[in-house]
Amino acid sequence: MKETKGFRLRDIIIIIIITSIITSLTTGVIVYNQNRLTKNITFQDLSKDTDLKEFLKVYASLIEDYYENVDKKAMLESAIEAMFNYLGEDYSTYMSQEETNSLADQLKGEYKGLGIQLNRSTKAIEGFVEGGAAKESGLMIGDIIIKVDDKEINSTDEINEIVEKTKEGTKLNITVNRNEEILSFDVENKKILIPAIAYVLMENNIGYLKMEQFSNTLSEQVEFALKDMEQNGMKSLIIDLRDNTGGYLKEAKDIASMFLEKGKTIYSLEEKNGNTVFKDETNEKRDYKIVILMNESSASASEVLIAALKESYGAITVGTRSYGKGKVQQTRNLEDGSMVKYTSAKWLTPNGECIDGFGIKPDYEIEKEMNSSFDEQLEKAIELAEGE
Image (cartoon, rainbow, N blue to C red; front, side, top):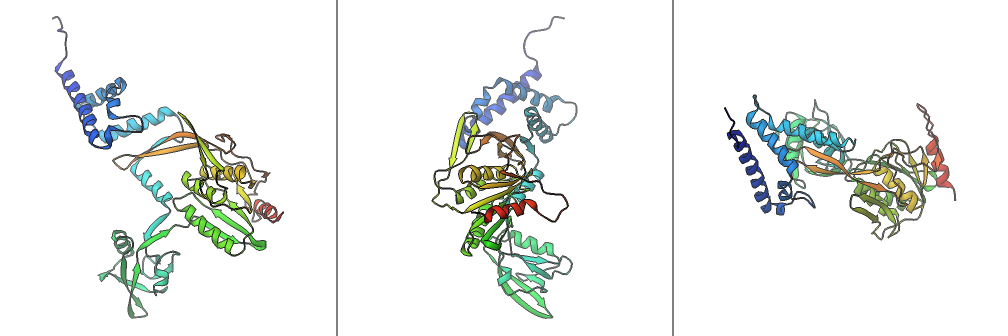
């Protein structure tokens, strides 16, 4: 029997589905964000993309005709992962909702709370967190929490749940048992910074500042530490960035701006469509000697700060060659809570060098002996900070 030319019913259904999807996307998004997906691409642009139409045809066919039920969410996650596998680059990746939440918590740098450390089994206060309101409220170590806002408390998890649901800035009434005496205190539920630094003013007025991670609150903590040490007579500074693997680029820029003279280059970005130079735009600056400690785990935002202070400030570097991550990533959150992270540019030092794969060589290359209590790198940094 001669086959009749034309479309089969299934083909017509697929075309209708694809057309409906594209039409609903291109009309609906005009209302939301003016039909724009990114700076240069709209849904309407994608509706004309023949390759994407082929993808949608396959997607529609599998949803419609595959012999078993298809988990659309899982299938699309696999498709997204495949796109990043195609790029073949370590820094560009798809992150699940759990991974996204974990990274956000890690870099947030703050949390809402009362500033109390509790024994999980007894609900007794074991300590206070700096920056929390509990320390100055009248509560004491050993107090056993029995009520929060007149609600009987049976576990520390219940306390955490109440704190989480209460708006920041609200005062909670905490009732405690103190040696069989029942007492109540009002404690503000406030923002508490997660410590990302350690600092101390050493002999000869040398400041030591260790930065753990470029979290969202690092610059705020660094500014406090600098002013505290400066008010107590600091004349030179050692910045310890060993084992600091990076974080937010903005924090590195903000910290560099605390030291550099206005107009000095911090870094530049080499993007697909050209280069952008980022300079210090603040009136804040410092002029004391800075020595930076670094090692092979100093990476990303750490390297941005090292390069900025080394090349635009004149800081001295001590330790071993840094990791060599010279690329910058953007993130895009997806509606299901997951996230995609992809490289959007290379960053260049103030002198215009790309350190990706090479790292930054220190002025004084000194290996630190494993399992040794003596810190040769720090001792050299102190010697340099003391010198004229």
